[in-house]
Length: 71
Image 1 (tube, rainbow, N blue to C red):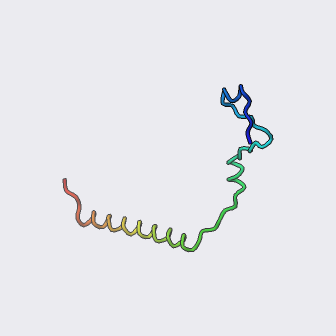
Image 2: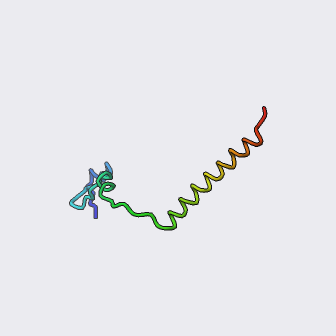
Image 3: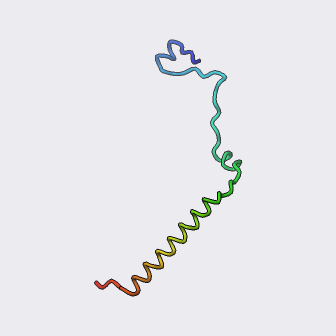
């Protein structure tokens, strides 16, 4: 519970006692985190996405080669 004295209440300043919460250092948190392996469904999703992208790119190249755009 925070207790405000008159001057602090007028200035809207909060008395912070022993219950201060330390600010976490994000660099240390990220470095301390363990790497999680990909799930099988995530691997399939990555494979399908790459395959679809490469396949559609090949189709686009083939269409552009056989039916070129003439300006």
